[in-house]
Image 1 (cartoon, rainbow, N blue to C red):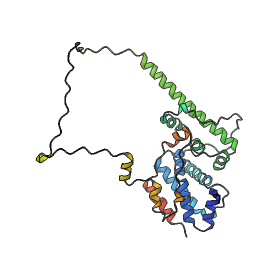
Image 2 (tube, rainbow, N blue to C red):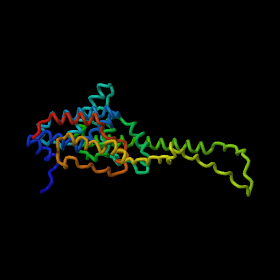
Image 3 (cartoon, helix red, strand yellow):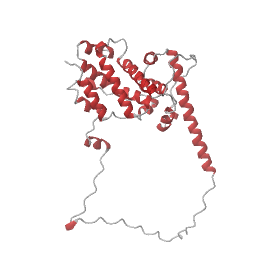
Image 4 (spheres, helix red, strand yellow):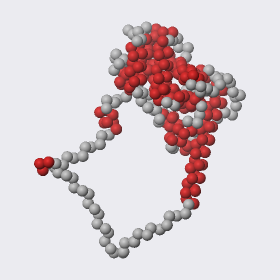
Length: 305
C-alpha cells in the first residue's frame, strides 16, 4: 500500500479523534524546523523556543478543525511566521511591508556559490545583516527546501514577489561576504608591506657544538605508602560524554513523555543536501530541557485514544 501524504496522514489521526498522536506527529516532524524559523527571525535562542511553544499551542488548539487545505508544515510555518511578526511589532521592530514589490523578470534565486561558504562565520555575518522576513525566506527556501508556491502561502505573497525578495536577500549576502573578503585581503596586503622585524641578537650556536641538553620533565610523585602514582584519567569522547550526561537527543527525552508513540513518529530528519543548507543548519542547537517539558505538558492536555 502506498504511503499516505503528510496531509492525509495527519488528517487520518484527526479524523480518528486521536489529537494527542496528531500533536506528537507534528512535534516529531517539525519542531526543529519551527524553532529554526523562529530563531532566524528573532535571533535569540530562548525567545525562539518561547515563540515555538506558542506556535504549537495555537496549532494544537486548532487540530480538530484541520482539513488539509495546506500541508502540515506550511500550516505550521505560517503560524510561526505570524507569531514572530506579532512579537516584533510589539517590540517596535517593524518587519518588511507585506505589499507586493515590482517583480523583476531577471530575479536571481541561485544560492551562494560554494567558494563563499568555506567559512561558516562568513555566512553568519552576512545572514545577520538581513531583515527578519528575509532571514525567514532564506531558511525556508534553502534550509528546508520549500518551493515557491509553499513560500507564497506561508508569507501571503505572490510567487513573483517571493522570487524578487529572495533575490534581493541573496544579493545582500553576496555583497556582504565579498566586502568582508576584500577587507581581509587589504589587511593582509598591508601586513605584508609592513617593515620586517630586526634580526635577533641571540648568539648563534657554533658549528659542531653539541645542542643544549633537554630538561627532563618532573617525575610524578609517588603515592603515600610507596604505591605507584595513579594514571591520568582518559579523556572521554564527545559521544561518551553526551551519554554520561544523559544525552541521546531531545526527541528521545520527549518520547519518554509521549506515552509510547510508535517509532514512525520519530523518523530522523535527513541531513542538509547543499553547502548553503549545511552552513545555515550548522548554528542550530538542540531544543532545551525546559522547552521539551513545556511541549510535553501541552501534548498531555490533548485528548487521545
